[in-house]
Amino acid sequence: MRNKKLFSAFLMLLITMVSLTSASYAWFSQNVAVQLEGLELNVEAADGIQVSTDAENWRASLDVQDIIDGYTGHTNQVPSILSPVSTIGSQSTGNFEMFSGSLNEEGTTTLTTTGPVTEVAGTFGEFIAFDLFVRTTTTEAIYLDDVSDIGYVSGDGTSESVGLEYSSRIAFFNQGTDGTYTPATARALAGGTSATQVIWEPHALSHTTAALGQGASTTEKTPYYGVKAAGTELPLSDFASQTEYFELVETITPDTDTVPFDTTNPDNIIFTAEPGITKIRVYVWFEGQDIDNENSAALGLSNDADSYLSLTIKFLKLEA
Amino acid sequence: MGGKVNKEKKGISVASLMLNTFFVLLIILAGIITIVSLSTQDEGVANVAGFIPYSIQSESMEDTIMKGDLIFTRVYDGETLLDQDEIISFFAMEQNQRIIKTHRILEVNDDGLMVSYTTQGDNNIIEDAEEVPPGDVISVYNGVRIPKVGYALDFFSSKYGFLFGIILPMFIFFIYQLYVFIELIVEMKYEKKKQA
Image (cartoon, rainbow over all chains, first blue to last red; front, side):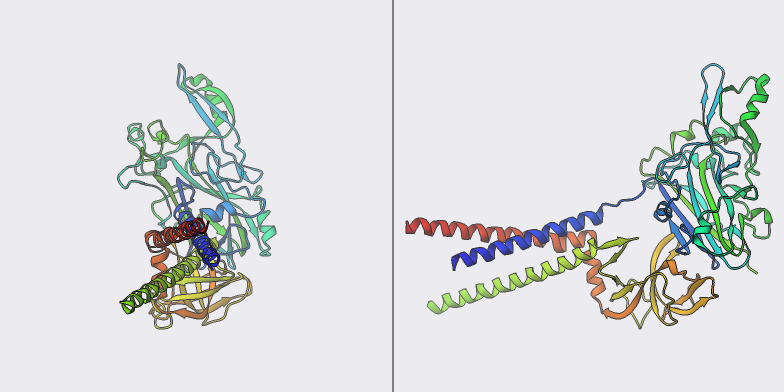
């Protein structure tokens, strides 16, 4: 009898222990937020436009995890911390040619550029690049809604950005349309000579104090020397070497800025989606040659370690 | 005197039974919430063997589904063409945040190439602003709802509700059971010693 009692007590103790352990584990795992720190990324589509990261599952909105997951064989590169790179929007094998660079300011200032940088799937890299698929049944001119933005979000609610986002760029590289609505065919699209691209500078008219001191404009887009080739230690101050310098860089002006989001202005068309599945390669980067990409901005978003970049892209189409 | 002792013993037995019943129910509740928490968590949605429970947070579907109800839905396969009047749970964007809505299908838009659903809450005056593509549909309501239980699930699923409503009482019960177990062992050892 006593043994039975002991056995019952032991069983009850065991059940309670197992329940307590699993409940504690469940509570703990629910409250440990696992997220990509430093970046919030949303892609939305309005007006019946459908978007996808794999050309098969069609949705009205995508978040950063959807983009990281992509499809088998994708090269979606989604780091949470971006480093400055530069490009003129030139294309090679279906991708933008992005270059890293560094300035040596000891003695004669020289510029060294390396690249093009290879895009690798995952959460590492200097810039964001991912495939986006858009499905329509009629030809649609696609614009950006004015909630589209890349901005700084304070983690502690009081810190302010040091202005790194002012040098941000978002590009939409139209790699073509598959008119047969076949996912595998759409995924394989890679641009080519007919591919078009638009570079958007969200904060074209906002500048750091230092940039304003150098004459940056608050009324129109400021051109810059985008990097187009790799080169070593090219002196910037020696204009006798100007020819060599311009072998590395090219003057470009972003195709569009945030003001105004005027759908009657054809310059604000981000891309044209033909009937079928259109593949867009989206790039997000801090332009290293931008006038706002200087040392004070390069300290990071701010001194608030919990701050992060928030990127929203929302497509809409011209209403008939 | 004997009667008083018997009454006291009876009282203790009843209290003990009630306490044990309470803690058994607590263990069952903890088990349910633990299973829901640990089950497949796809995009923040708990999938328990193909069914997804939701606690309704708004009045948009009243009087069909009331705020605070716990409803059960079956996971959507992503391919089946849904019917008009079916009630679906789906992802939607509101003020840059992804939320889950449960509304009725007003119209199925299928041109042979693309499918989307026009939806509306039964208690809403106008239809939802954006059509719902199949990829945003999470699950389909199967008609099972438990009134007001959603509120309890919300509380016990919250960080502090779970901690103070389930884990803390279970921890106290565990200590009590440990005490009972040790007491029994001590008693048995004492009796053995006595017999020896």
